Amino acid sequence: MKATAMAHTNIALIKYWGKRDETLFLPMNSSLSITLDKFYTTTTVEFCTHLYEDVFILNGSLTNEAETQKVTRFLNIVRKMSGKELFAIVKSNNKVPTAAGFASSASGYAALAAASTKAIGLDIDNRTLSKIARLGSGSACRSIYGGFVEWQKGEEEDGSDSFAKPIIAHDSWDISILSVLITANQKKVLSREGMKRVVETSPFYSSWPIEAEKDLIIAKKAIQERDFDELGRVTEANALKMHATTLGANPPFLYWQSATIDVIQKVQELRSIGLHAYFTIDAGPNVKIICLPQDEQAVKESLHSLPAIRDVYSSRIGPGVQLLA
Ligand code: PMV
Image (cartoon, rainbow, N blue to C red; front, top):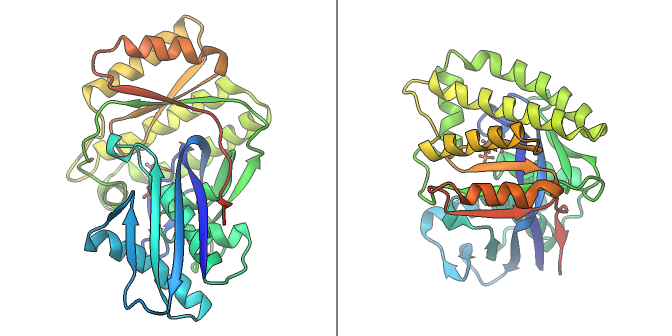
């Protein structure tokens, strides 16, 4: 009753921002991401008869009660599906610079979903796995697949049609993704809390799902046609629209720091000299840049000239979840 799985993180080009159902993690809009090859989580789950509670070891250390409870809440779903009442030892290792403020919940829950379902003896396909991972963290449902992935929001109240699906294979378009580290500090408004606040209070939110669906159509067409600049333009526009909703919230909030704007302006400047680079920003101050592989070195070098930049991590498009044992 033991299994190990590995899942990679993903970066949304068209953002998931806002839930229509908080318990089932059902989104207001469909989203689109790319899975990264460099950042991943490896998780081993072993269900044992002699345990009286779940044990969660993260990067070699026993976690606190709050972290363990999150895992227990997730394993309860898997236990219920299998009809088995066993507790588990969960060992997770993140090859994600979590201390650097890059989220690991997507790779974490995707790996946990794959390892725990396999360990408990459930035989399920990737679509079902995507729906299960979604119940840990929305964006995790996209990390089941590699490459360019769409999470279709679905219409059903029970979430049965809200899952991710690949758009093109992970090795069919080579793109470079730079994760720009500005600060490693814990963000003040977590994504879960931020999206809830904009849905409930921001007067700008009502146009978000409409705009996101339009942007998704443009992004999917650009991917099919391998039109990098069109994809980049819609990626940037979508990120800016997401962040605009936070300015109208009550109380208002902004994820950016001054260095975030420095990076935005640097990317715009690079484009004016002919480089193919576009930014996106999630629920925090750090910036991700997508660029053509031939421009990666020049983009990286120009970022190092900005004093507030602490580090830049390069990735390429990565694979979907894998069972290792
Ligand atoms: O799934 P969560 O709770 O990590 O939320 C992710 C929200 C964004 O990163 C801002 C957007 C996205 O689609 O990943």
